[in-house]
Length: 384
Ligand SMILES: *[C@@H]1O[C@H](CO)[C@@H](O)[C@H](O)[C@H]1NC(C)=O
Ligand SMILES: *[C@@H]1O[C@H](CO)[C@@H](O)[C@H](O)[C@H]1NC(C)=O
Image (cartoon, rainbow, N blue to C red; front, top):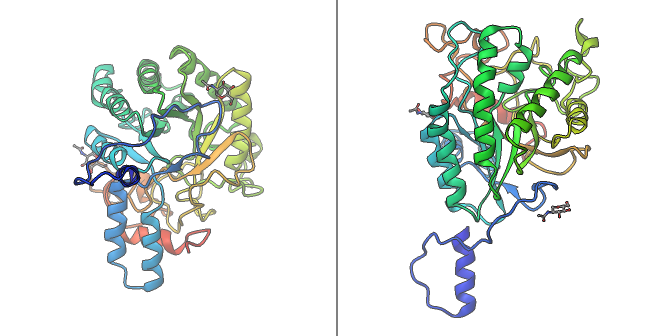
């Protein structure tokens, strides 16, 4: 803890200790994003998720599973900022994290519904800026001795590229361009590294989407004025895809010949090369929180509470086997529901009722103990 560094300093100086105060004793952070930040820094456990995991662990009778659950409490996991109230969790983490930890934040303020649906309403620039970006920027400024890694807006860029023929998605693009430029500038603080979410191989990995995706990414980056702290892109955020399975989970489908990105490693390589050619920072992080088991879905579009899933590789910068891939991270908080399986709920999405989705599942954002225990049981590699 930061207070701990203070203790050492005081003991060393022979000063009598007064009650500990959260005085930060870490050095100011300047992240040089021409290199990876995942060697010096380790992902910090999300304090809110940690609490849920500890409560979940307390309910487990089986000794082996209980011990596994306790291990998860200490795994670094991103904090999802979906509304202004979750910003307090980011503040809490920033205040208490050790000097060599980096706070992971998934900025998820824009995507309130699917842009291809008729009800879709893009968020206004004013609401977006005032509710999400300005407060998050203030947290970065107030914690100059804490490092932050931010995944910017899961799925949005890919949604726009893939649905470019749908009018409501074009209107999302207009608001996205404005909001992204604002967000990337505001959050491009010396103590932050930014990864723009690029979906996964099942979206931008199609031969027909790679180039438009990279071009759009480049235009967003340029439009924002080349913000200094962008390191590249995030893949598989909240997703289920394999990093390097061969030939790939959906490689035998009829459409497969039109998509070479049958695993995320290939997607990062193909998309990263294209971004590099477009003059855009092109290093990636990959969410491995729930991809321990593959082969569970009927198709790539299934995103909700996949049944039979297991925790995947723990966060690490080792072993990606690709210079463009900085690290495996846990972006999704495994055990938190993606959406309710109750068809009578106003927020019900039919993907959460599919044959391959876990049931029953509570509303999005709520804890699902049974799902958490399944992730533990099916973890690959095994948690020990
Ligand atoms: C950042 O790192 C690169 C090499 O990785 C180096 O060339 C550059 O001078 C560094 N920038 C700063 C501001 O330290
Ligand atoms: C904000 O998000 C959190 C986590 O998803 C949720 O528990 C909470 O109810 C939300 N608050 C509001 C005001 O929507």
